[in-house]
Length: 365
Ligand code: IPM
Ligand code: MN
Image 1: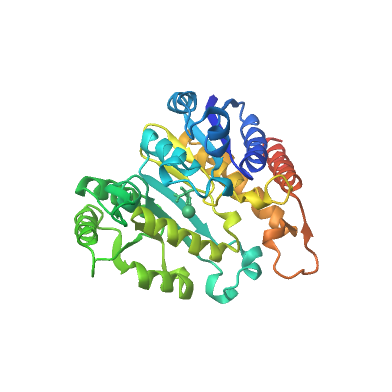
Image 2: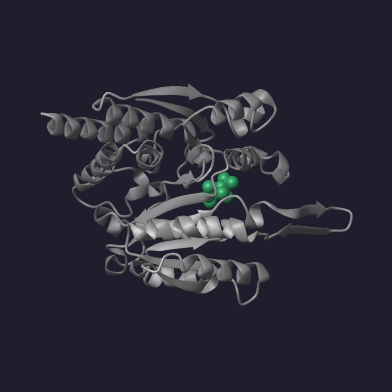
């Protein structure tokens, strides 16, 4: 099979981390006789610089014409004074909207080897394994009206959902739970917001179609606390767009680093894969960024867009193995412990690629 993928490396550390992830992907699929048919396009700040717009028309066309989009990161401090409508981030939001994927899956699991790197105690996080389902096309990010009325000195955004928008993402969450520990936690602010009350009511309706899955509701404020105190109690967590944005950055503390959090967005015309972290402009070009979130994002792409389960598993296993052998990027070392070797972005990517290669060689011999 030919995997037709559009790569949009984007800004900051985006190009370095996607380069490593693509090398790992190539290695993982070739043993099965598959090839990557790659196209590269600009998005975000680099696109503003070259094309005058964060989402050039040829990038969008190529994205819609691909089987999966693999994105690095967007954003650069030099655009900080611009309004949201002109910033690099709007290119990503427009791409998400055009591709139509509404369920952003962000798996958070504590690699045993990295528990020491988390500020949380090992006995709290060891074994934690949560699948966040962040609604990605509605809520506070996309609701209208939205405006900063400079003359009036007033600004507003709108948290808006339709029942259908809530129901479809809830269904994704319940389906995922059926293949996991059969528990869904829906997060809202139903003690204050009407939109959350409808969210909760809709989730309860959908839950009736999944009698084998238990459902609980948490308020976003309480959930932020429970996540740090008892992360192992959660299986699938489904929530509004911005609540999900915030909760998943918080949850990355469980994994030891934001550099470990992959993501994939499904449900639309073309699935979109991007690490959950940002473009980290201050780390760009220094060969210090952690490519593992992006490499794990590649595994999600193989799984969710091409059903290459064995290849996806090989990548996850290789990441685990490399960590077991004591290899770390600098963000994964809190205090320098004996037996750890700190690697650069390229060297870490190469270690994982090599490990995938060895695994697949052994498997086929
Ligand atoms: C993320 C990022 C994006 C978001 C930004 C870059 C627009 O923070 O993917 O979590 O807020 O969705
Ligand atoms: Mn975010």
